[in-house]
Amino acid sequence: MNLLSSGPVRTHRIDVRGLTKKYGPATVVDNLSFTVEPGHVTGFLGPNGAGKSTTMKMILGLAAPTQGSATIGGLHYHDLPVPLVHVGALLDAGAVHGSRTAHDHLLALAASNGLPAGRVGAVLERTGLTSVARKHAGEFSLGMRQRLGIAAALLGDPGVLIFDEPVNGLDPEGIRWIRGFMRSLAREGRAVLVSSHLMSEMAQTADHLVVIGRGRLIADTSMTDFMAANSEGTSLVRCSEPAVFARMLTAAGATVRDGLESSLVVAGLTGAEIGRLAAYNDIVLSELAPQQASLEDAFMELTKDSLEYLGATS
Ligand SMILES: Nc1ncnc2c1ncn2[C@@H]1O[C@H](COP(=O)(O)OP(=O)(O)OP(=O)(O)O)[C@@H](O)[C@H]1O
View 1: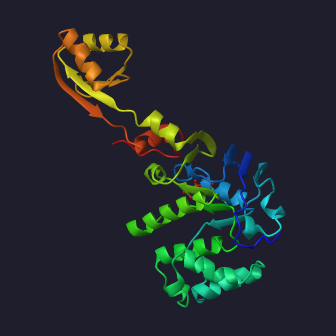
View 2 (view 1 turned 180 degrees about the horizontal axis):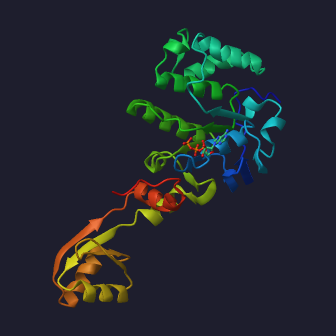
View 3 (view 1 turned 45 degrees about the horizontal axis):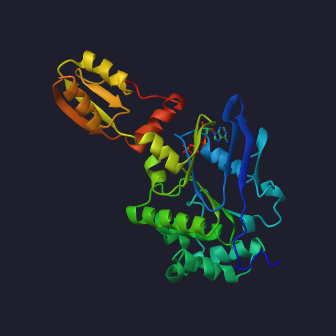
């Protein structure tokens, strides 16, 4: 079998099991288990310092786990015969040799990994770099360096791709390109793991979410389920007798909490249902307004207990 042909993509899963990393007394990845499936973009979310990069480095054999394992298609990274054929990664786009042209950078990488030179043209084409292939990478903008890093990750036509905060610092056009690119890689049957500290980033890209905080798993869910559970609207209600109406709402199955200035924040009933209940009980509503919780709010809520430091309140 020719592992380097442009035939169907080899599908692999990433399996992370009980993965733990300690640096001195600090446990930065703590008994983490999750799976990254082929054909999906899995968003790896967590606040800064949550342990995302460290986890990715362990999957890629760049850091040794203190406990547990991370495998690609059942093998540890160091046991993969030609690693780039199975997994490609973009960890730090700045780490490109500025003195080489994009073409020569990729050619050197192909040669040192035993990959055919023909792949260089293919990945330049795929990442839209053909016209600048003879330019020095040192002259590249961040967006172009990012594309070059992705071209390198694709050299072995791997079934697994790992991107660490790929849109950091990019302009809107670069961000849109990367999002679309990751989705196209998943459509081809590849397993794509991409980290971010922004929920809004993931909402437009990922099919699945793995959320961590302080190195621990907080959520492992499909994007659809996360959205259904967290973007449910609440209603803000102002009325003549909030305490009385709150009891009625609760009796009708709503969840009610106090809002600002004697308002009520009501979940579990639609605006129309709240309005009907008020009319039926002769409660005068002075305000009934839908409140849409953003996914970013839901993510903040989910990770608030795991933030390393909280802003001081003045
Ligand atoms: N080589 C190291 N030695 C000691 N501590 C480290 C090392 N690498 C990472 N850490 C610490 O481990 C914690 C997790 O870092 P990591 O970079 O994995 O987090 P992250 O979720 O990727 O965050 P960020 O988005 O800020 O990079 C941090 O507190 C960091 O300071």
